[in-house]
Image (cartoon, rainbow, N blue to C red; front, side, top):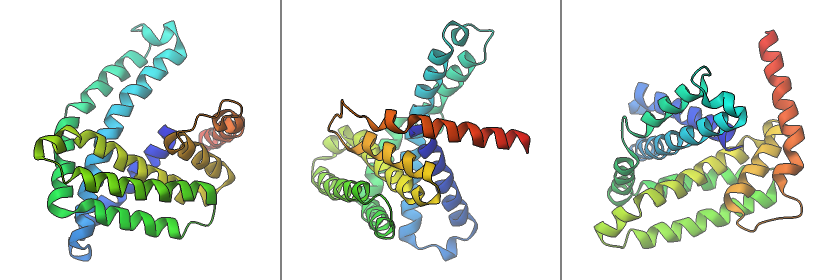
Amino acid sequence: MKHEVETSALFKMIQRFDQTARFPAQVSAKEQTVTRLLIAILKKETAEQSIHFSHEAIEMHGGNGYIEDFVTPRLLRDAQVLTVWEGTANILGLEVVRLLTKHKAHEQLFTEMKFTLENVTVLSKEKALLQKEIADQENWIHEGLQLSQDLQTFHSKEIAKRLVDIYEGVHAIERAAESERKLSVAKVFIHQTFNHAIKKANPLTLKFAEDILQLSEETAAKTDEN
């Protein structure tokens, strides 16, 4: 769920950046600032997650995934460089803090996220969970920005992580109305990310796994046929 939602959210951000770069006069200064913020938090998150997903790919293939005759060891090595080139997590964290303290980029981002959620007509429980999370993070970031510069730097990567989770969560629920499968994906993603209460008896990941994976395989098969 994380991989799918994050990939989709990334391409949505790329589309936004493309619009900003091609037609800057049509984009307000606040919107341009939010775009810069999204680039920073998504670059950090996707780079770190690529290592995680490459490692999972090796584990899924067992011994075959580890030996050099297979492709996955190279994928893991290639993924490692993503956290280094074009901005390490520490540098991106500093960029996030600068955008928040100097340009109040988080205020515009939260405004956009709230507006998006207001227009969501599905998953009312998950929508309420996200709205509460936004309110909590608004307060948390506001308090954090009152701290000294050293402490802001110390918490910079945590701030970036909380912001990207909200952005991806809102994106997941925004696309939920497109199909029954995406609705299930959004429900699982939001509960995995924001519902900190552990449900031992009936985890949503297991409840929806068969439907989500089956539909994913059917989509891949149709793509191969085309």
